[in-house]
Image (cartoon, rainbow, N blue to C red; front, side, top):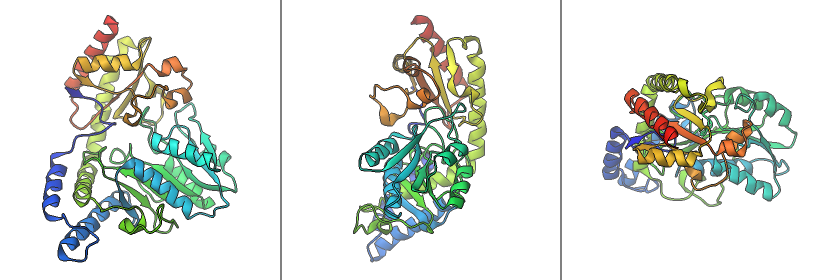
Length: 374
């Protein structure tokens, strides 16, 4: 099968897998233990924190390891809120965040927080002007994702972060889809969430970054692991493999970016005769991730396209893997002005480092065949 669903997850790289096995054999001790075996794990964690912090121009003391991006999102937001004046109950976010954050903000709204859900503008992003207009004296924090997993749009988080820093408002960004794909600098961002399995590292590992100058309090009082950020024995082998994946992808980031641009351009050329039926949703966006190609196929539901592609040996998706089984149409597509029927015609192709031109050419042939046979 040809895999074109890298935005959902990636296979572990050989290097990351090799380091995982090595760390599992040699750094198996509890990193909180005081004996020498525990010290090996503790030193492995320290080295991993430095690698990840350096990749985002951050401070290693602000890196906290989690079980993935979703946990990093939720625990970071709650920990930041715990450290903010409780009289400030206003939060600004977008209506297009990852499901982990969207549902968590809905929960916060139900317990008394005033949540402003900003909607994408015509360019598919949340602009600085939208944030400026929504800001109140009671605003506790702002959380705007860096890159949208469904349409690939990139939000101007550096610009938003610089403004919020002047206003002394905490700013968090879910960077799971962009980390390792485009440059990321936390100079003007107080907190971010990232994940290992999107960059050829193991699943079940992620990280939160909170600038050490920002005050926060534990989500669960009495927690001792990860400086009180989260409970549970730390997965040292998984984290070592994550740090390895980070090092590797940093070295190849520009190469992969150029590779994705080339493949996306090829795909665009191949479907040019069929643009009355096949539409690339992100084609009008000024900035978007080149590894994500969001499509609408006129008159055919995305789920049918996805299942037929699977029958022909291609793995694609109908959106975020965290929402599989959901019948509701894409929130991102609705925000761009598409109606519910059109939004249900959405499918997503996402490219990886091993995707080839030949695979794209073969996929387009299969896609056209499915459409003609419908």
